[in-house]
Image (spheres, rainbow, N blue to C red):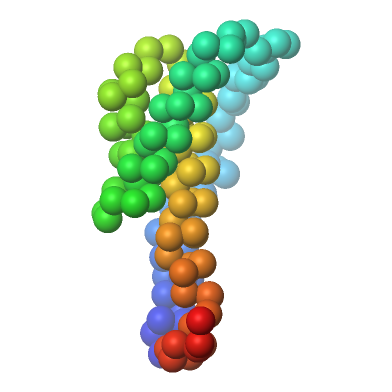
Length: 119
């Protein structure tokens, strides 16, 4: 019974923060948006390679998430700059979610209500 109303109680923890932000009337600085993105193919390639390695580590190793897998792969492949780091975390998350989906859900597609249906 209480599981149905749990999200409402969890949401109440954010209410003081929201109310303080609404009442404070702070002025926020304008965000800087650059006109062009500067990177080279090597940074993008290194980021994708590192991210694929990290996502693979995370998808097929128990208890490891995409962030930790990306961190491990970043250390293993010595990702040095911000562009490679950002691309690697995006690729790591993608490979993690796709790999976990393929590993956990697709092998059980032929299962119906806990019973194995013929292969």
